[in-house]
Each structure stands twice: as C-alpha cells, then as structure tokens.
Amino acid sequence: MYLLGFDIGSSSVKASIINIATGQTAASAFSPKAEMKINAPKAGWAEQEPAIWVENAKNALAEIRQNNTIEFQNIQAIGISYQMHGLVITDNKGNVLRPSIIWCDSRAVETGNKAFNEIGTEYCLSNLLNSPGNFTASKLKWVKDNEPDIYNKIDKIMLPGDYFAYYLTDEICTTAGGLSEGIFWNFNESGLDKKLLEYYGIDKNLIPEIKDTFSIQGLVTQKAAKEFGIPSGIPVSYRAGDQPNNAFSLNVLNRGEVAATAGTSGVVYGVTDQIKFDPKSRVNTFLHVNNTLANQRLGVLLCINATGILNSWLKKNIATDLSYEQMNNEASQAPIGSDNLLFYPFGNGAERVLENMERSAELKGLNLNIHSRAHILRAAQEGIVFAFVYGMEIMEQTGISTKVIKAGKANMFLSSIFRDTLAGVTGATIELYNTDGSAGAARGAGVGAGLYKTFDEAFSTLKKLEEIKVSTAEQTKYRTAYEKWKAGL
Image (cartoon, rainbow, N blue to C red; front, top):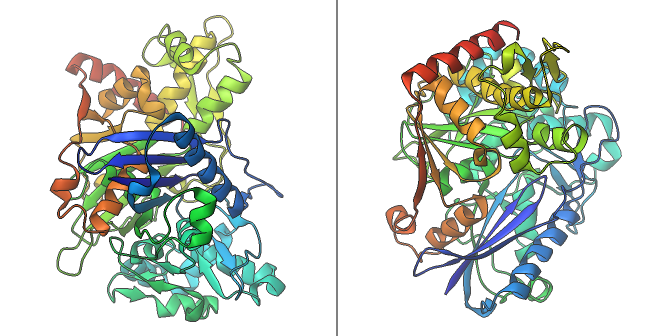
C-alpha cells in the first residue's frame, strides 16, 4: 500500500510514492527537466498558468509509471505541498480567470505598504503578525483595483495547492495555515481578519471553506483518476505551503526546531509556541502545520528569493561548460571569503528581509588581477549563505535560536561549500536527511487519512544521512567574511 505526494513548485512539480509499511520512498520523479516557465509581462511581475502545474504533475506521475512496477491501484491517499503566497482566481464554473500571480511577483508591494500604514502598523503586527506586504490578500486587492472586469467575475480565490486539490477532487477548500500565509488570518481571533477584508473591500464569500491540514479534503474524481492514472475515490488528506511542509518533512514540529531549504528561493523556518513578530515584517510568522487551539505552533519564516536561481544563472551564463558538481569543485579552489569578492544574491523580486526592497544582484570588489571564475562561483554561494545569516539574526529577535539546522540533502545543500559556510557562520550543526517536499506531503497524507496514527509513526523511518560541524578556527574565518559582506549591504 502506498501514499502519493505532490510538491507543486514554481520551477518544477515533483511526485513521490511512499510505501506505507516501510516508510521508504518507492519512486519519485519531477517535471519538467528544465525549469518551468515564469511569465513576466512587466518588470517585477511573475505569473504562471495553473494548467502547467497540472500537466507537469501528470508527466511526473507518468515517468514513475514508466520506470517502476508500482501498482497505482494501491495508492491510499494523496498529500499536496505547494508554492506559497500565490493567487488563483476562478469563476462560478471553476474556470481560471487569469494566470496565477505567484510568490515572487512584486506588483502588490505598494498596495500592502499602504494597507500597513492606513490600517495601522500596531494592529497589523498584533493581529496579522505581519505587514499585508506583497502577500496573497494584497495581490487580490491589486486585481480588484487594476482588473475590475476580471475581479467582478470571481467566485472563489485559491492558493496554488488549493487549485491543484480542486482539480483532483472538484472540491474547493483551503486551510487556516494557507490563509495565514496569505495574510488573511487574525491570530488573536483564530479566524479571517475582518478589518483587512473590509479595508480591501474583499467579500469573505470569495474565501473557500476552511478544512484541517490533516483531514479528508476531497476525493479524487473519475475524470482526474483517468487523467492521472490513479484510483478514483482516494482522499486528498493533507495540504500545506512548501515551507511549512518542508519543515514537516524533516519532522520539525516543536518549539526551537529549525528547518532550511535552498531551492529556487532559500528559506529558514523555525517553530515557536509564542506569538512574536518582527516589527519591520522582514521575517514572517504563520500557522505551522500542527497548530491547534490547545497546542499553538507557529512558524517563523525567512525567505531569500534569489538562491538556487542565482546558481542556475551562473551555470547558464558564466559556467556554461560545467555541471553543478563541477561548479562546486571549481569554487572550492578559492579561499574562504573569496579574497574579498562580495556577491549580493538579490534580483529576483522584492526581498522581504530587505523590507520589500527590489534590489539588484551585485558583485562588489572585483579585482581583475586576482579574481577568477572560481572566486565568482564561491562568492555567490557565500553571498547566499550570508543573506541567510543576516535574516537569521532578525529571527533571533522573535525567539528563534538556531543550534541545529535540519535540511533535505538536495539543491544547494548538495554543495559542501554552501553547507560548510552556513555551519561556519552560524556555529550550528547541520543535519541532512533522506527526504524532500513531495515525500513529506505523502507522509502528511498518511497522517490525514489515519494510516499513520501519530507523527512519530509517520517519521519512524526518517534517516539522517550526514552531519556537518565546523571547527572553531574555521568558524572565525567564515564569520570574518560574513562581517565584511554585511558591512557592504
């Protein structure tokens, strides 16, 4: 018997099938093999057609079917992880009215900033725990102001994962966690924030029914079953935004635990049981997947937009003759600190950690006599880590102290330079595990469908692959390099 998990990203869609009895991944695949297209009709915009998420989910599942002997009729439940903060809008027949405005789109920055000031910073931070910023609610307000003909046709709004679940089940619903990520949620009232909806002029009936993160949220229709080649009637029993889900996939569920990921964007995500916030909303607080009224669990999230995408840009434009592994090997030829070459890894939309500033990527201190391509490649990875650390210092003010960082062994965490730099600057131990977002979503489906009775049972087979620690002497070198980078920020 199996569980199926999907991770609906902005770069690709991954599917994983987990054996319920062993807890091991039986098969996985992702699509497309090159990055999914992100449309930018104007500077600072980022849109995707929801249909491409569906098609790539089908393609990933088809690849699993082609390369494995798994009997798909034994799939018992489906879990969904999805790119956070996106906006999908549909009419009363469920038709998508416009491309999804996704997480790295910056068009609603001023909309959110205005709301923050006019609703009141004290009210927003005390109740929303965030500025309305460039989140889903502000994106919807942008549509209302700039595309009124489309807005007036809206029957329901959805997050990307809500839409994918709707495609599978024909049931439109969302979660409290998803609404908190969209800045619709009042943490003190444990419900929709009426003041923000009223200020933005948003009818609460546009918000779908709220269901528990771990629950039966709909059953796969015959139509979807035929398209995906899976049984009809199986439940979608878990959904969560990609970063809360990444933490869940690493069994990061309790106060003081910290998870990180470094894909297209980079995230550090710490769990707390206290309502705390950054007064400048540079890091953001959301409901964690296991939050309940009796046991409060909140996630404090730091996001750096240009992480893996910077490494990808370097490969396409600077290191066209190298694989990613070869890039890491070449970068290791440069010393810690890259001989004072500083890379600032921005340029992929408004950076929350910089108070929603849209800042370009920058290479500083280039010396044509001493710096080589190896220095540039290393400086980029160091710059990404330094941006992480800059945000983690802000996270400390919300009570997140980082002694251990858990991550899946994937993406930038495959690089020893990246791992050692992060461990070196923070002094934390990094633990790498055999999991990813789609596998975590599959485990979540097992919990939501009651196939795993507890979280401990769901994660009993999670294996630590590697542990990274850096000596005190090396930490000093990494910390010195970071302080130089920070001084130039």
